Image (cartoon, rainbow, N blue to C red):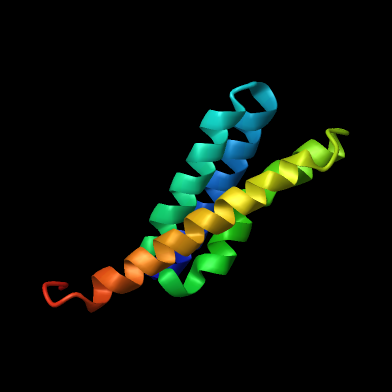
Length: 101
């Protein structure tokens, strides 16, 4: 149940961020949001980190490249991958800590 909710949240966030990226020039803010969303969702479900990174980061380059923006929007995948990796490590560490419920 939690895995399905995380996937739905990741897809929804990725689509929303792609829409925001198309409508604004605030690339730095969108990049940090991609990193943060991937980090938080991967902390909840560390084993799903690669899929979360794809769901959050892939819609931006798909829309931007289709619009003729070149290959630079692929950086969104890198930000999502870094966020997901950090989140997966944090989630795994927190689950193994003695005080974890």
